[in-house]
Length: 419
Image (cartoon, rainbow, N blue to C red; front, side, top):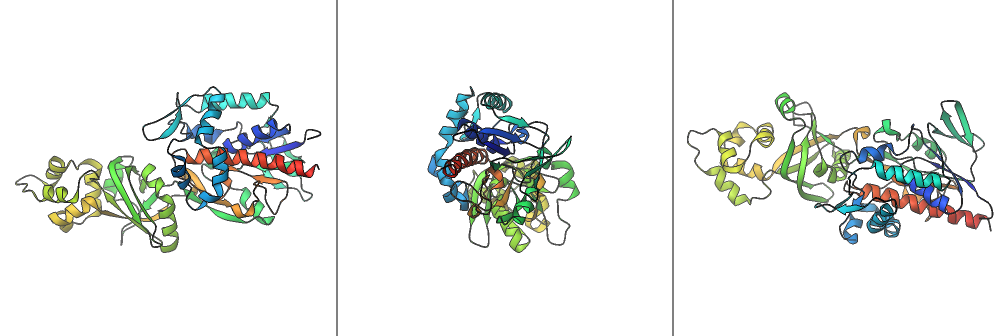
């Protein structure tokens, strides 16, 4: 560039910060705007239980975690794959390790040291931060509008990169308010939906949710080990062993999140989704049937299940919740239920409770540089794009990768514009 161009990045999450880093390294004058008093708030929340940056599985497997969008995301993820992300973190003085599950974490498991080091480097590169600047769209003549504590403020950059997030955890800054503004300017967008979310349970003839007994005694209890099996009407299937958590109204947790896209889509079409739980995933059906059928003498069913099969606590409560008395006292049917306990889901939890969102700017609305076809000079990155992935580091890696790609795309566009 013959002279520094003034570029605006809106959104201070991983995608926006990565874009700002790329743009500053390219010689641009970068102003980063964020609605919150400080940047990276959702990033810090993600690291509360240990910052899961990415995943250490083979890259060809890693790509499949992005489902229907893996082909479109592949070039950006290839350019900034898990190895590159770990090397980048190392450049900030943050060493990482691969946990037993394959997930990649900083050695100290914390998000704050990485964010502090990153912000220091960005400020050193000349990035200017503008907190408490909530983007409100455009003026009639094309300037960016911001609501600030001092009143409305307008900015006219040479180009803008949007990294506004989805609509989950709105209190941390991403509320999805941008979607109708882009739609009004001809951008093709998909409605925002919950992803990596919990679900409400239901039984025919009953109000949604658990019985008061199960809710009051076991809400918050983990169910493990357990395998979850889903087969939806379009033929897609899911099977995985892990754990989930009983909530006041249904279920949530890592195992549920991994199947959430299938379950959400099935509910959208049929108003419900069915799954089965294998409460004894490490035991074969014949062994379970033999143990259930053993004479129990004067012992209660609960004592028998606990002593012979290790079924007690929340697992026993689920059996009593989901089976009637006839099923519970029929050895063959009870044994079958221990391996295939049916559960009916009737609603996804609200989008603001979800870990992430699906929907947003359709990838077809962007060119290969991640610039909006309907709005030349406006680029998009991160979770506001229409892709989704399970937890396990996949969300963050794609946010970093698309932020980097959009920043590179913006610089490439400027280079062409200046010829």
